[in-house]
Length: 391
Image 1 (spheres, one colour):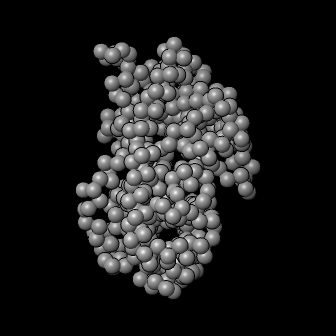
Image 2 (cartoon, rainbow, N blue to C red; image 1 turned 60 degrees about the horizontal axis):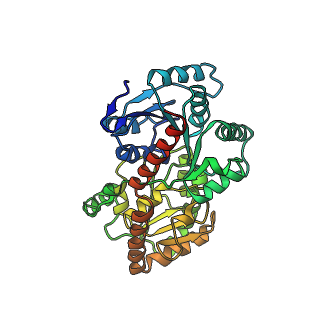
Image 3 (cartoon, helix red, strand yellow; image 1 turned 120 degrees about the vertical axis):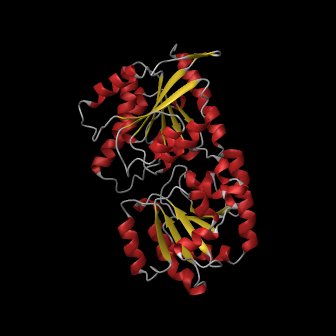
């Protein structure tokens, strides 16, 4: 790839490094971000280390005109990884490296320092410190060491996440910042959301008038969906017509299916699998539920709020920076099925309250979580670091 110059000056090559391009939150966020990046100033390309669920996001990025390069790295002990990354950065004439997810945050940051390039990292998680396996803790400590010592700026996606990274990761105040993740509001326009919502219900055999709860998440244990499934029997006692749609895939799916069977609610809990038509799915629902146990800033909540859905979510991590209790949703204790069932029944009983919360949620997203704001903040950060490095 060649470096070109526009009438406004040099065009900078930004290399985004990421572990995989599956349908996780960090991966999906790359689409609206790169679609809104200032292409008069920056030339982005993506370097991906692993194939996860076929890397479906790669096709979306390519459609935007963003090159996607596969540089296979299966484990951190790969002694060829750093030399290959250094060669890649030289061949692509990189000016700045932006990493996301564990392998990229470690290896990409080291490669950027070795190539004497400025580097930025976005950390999307607040890892639970309870019961963490020794190997996982080792990886976390290595990641924090690399970011603390070799990364020019660590971006936290919420104030709570920044506090965690400073305290647990021992990041310096000078080298951390907060930039909220943004979403493409055009995908959730009134026209898009007014498309046939009954099509989704017909697809899954859900009656047109039945109350529909929805969760969109990667199916991991820490997403807490098992607690919502345990809340379903209590909900069905009073509202036997309720259905619960779970959208996503992951290594915890079999356990969740078994939990639904164990609770006797398998007929009312629907597993939709990984999907790309999230706006259509959200528009078919009445209430969004995120019973997560830990979260830095769940972008899916911004998507649900854009679809004017009221939210039930755990009071953890950065969630309270998105949800104001009683305004655009309800904040609940994590891991408590009784609170989940009671809150669901309360909101299902008051459609006007749900509608008001949905309107408030949309207003909050437009103010705080528009991807155009995120892209502008990153533009300023990139130019500042490039100037500091004399690039």
